[in-house]
Image 1 (cartoon, one colour):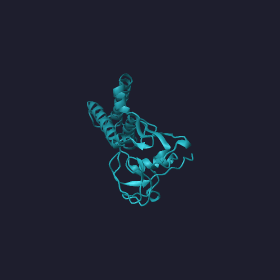
Image 2 (tube, rainbow, N blue to C red; image 1 turned 135 degrees about the vertical axis):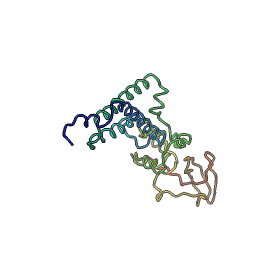
Image 3 (spheres, rainbow, N blue to C red; image 1 turned 45 degrees about the vertical axis):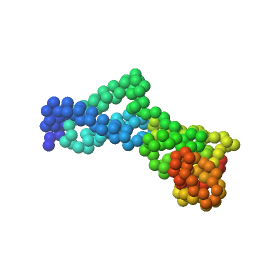
Image 4 (cartoon, rainbow, N blue to C red; image 1 turned 90 degrees about the vertical axis):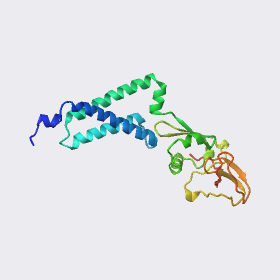
Length: 230
């Protein structure tokens, strides 16, 4: 191999027409990565929008190949960058002109907690496990949902929480780990219990078993009523 072999560095053994195939491959990679992230959900996307993350991932893959492999020509990789730049500019321009397209690309904030209760329609359409969701709440100082007046999942995956005043906190579903939260289908003693699926609370007598009037499930956990400390 000769150093600074321009034919090898720029195109290798490929014809000039291969640049068109590279543009198609870049478009294909962009669409596949975007659809994967769109379908799998937006959790784990922090600070970056979904569209920006797709661009960065695709660019990173192209840049990684040309950086580490001496048999990857430069011009096809340059075509990847040019294609993605055109896609980026065209997409941003379309998003500015069409609110519907912008909402489809970036998503909308989703209300997931309202007045201490889960918004079931929202949760059913999001890829969020209960453990991950509870961890997020605990990290923001939430012990139970009765402390939360409004919870909104933002388009970047962050959660915005708005709390009840201390004197307005009501009994709510505990978000503590399983070892700190009991669950029953037949409650052992009288008290206020919370549905573990929708967070609906109601007084129950000792030994009582009941279906939740809000969502129909039948597992209950003792409701907490502590004020938020921070």
